[in-house]
Length: 184
Image 1 (cartoon, rainbow, N blue to C red):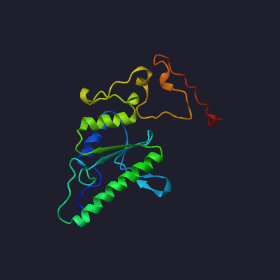
Image 2: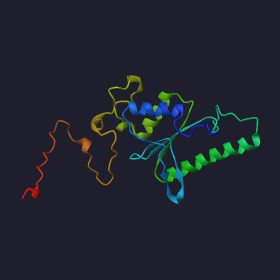
Image 3: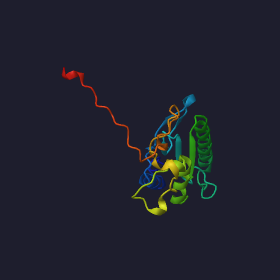
Image 4: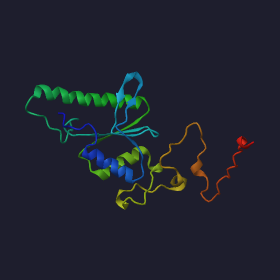
């Protein structure tokens, strides 16, 4: 079992590459320390938006469509796979209680569907657009003032002013020159 990867599986890499091409920035395999001492390591984490994405393998997480049950050593594999699923549900509940959005994707889901699921969880009104992404892989174009929003920054709940609502044609506020008192 040492040869089985915990991170950087082919479906996970494909999803990360596609999200990066679309302009999303994230952390990979980022440890989240939750209340009660629970530690969770989602495959892809959007910390500012509090979205945790897991790309689950069909065998290891007992996919109802493609998960297979080994015939040899059933006494070992049966309880192990059940524990994996139970751990996933406990982690999901802990993340939701902590205010996170949890996205679980099976490895067999087509890439386009996985991308649209993640983009929907992130909020389609804040979806970045990328000039290098193919037209079929881009998210729906945002409308209104949301198009000028920074794709990386999350809204600040402490500051209710929406800077993206400002008219993009308005000139920026001039920055006064800094006073340098060290020149004497």
